[in-house]
Length: 166
Figure (cartoon, one colour):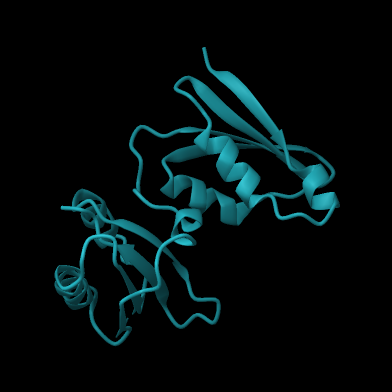
């Protein structure tokens, strides 16, 4: 039976506080057999992707008015090694690549070459034309951490990759 840990972010938001750190801390504190129940005053769509990349699936329940209950539980397989919050503590990138004009396969090859040229723990920043869905599992398999998102201006996909020890 799953034990539910509840986090109500409505008071945080009412005070004007950003709840993402509290949500990530609650998720990180979950033990096997626990799930996170989030109570929010809106449907937190951007959070779904963040949690998915951290290995969580979700179930949404409208509570009436604008309030939502979102239950997060561990997915069968985690999709990423990194998270956006972890990326805030990474060092500044040592390499910057604009790969927006390249086809996906060539962009992935250039990224792989760039990762060979940096030391363990170093970070590479890449701007890609689209989200590299096929590349992300390969980064995980190679022991690298990554965090990415779509550029707000629609110019492409921004990807930070931190080289693993391997």
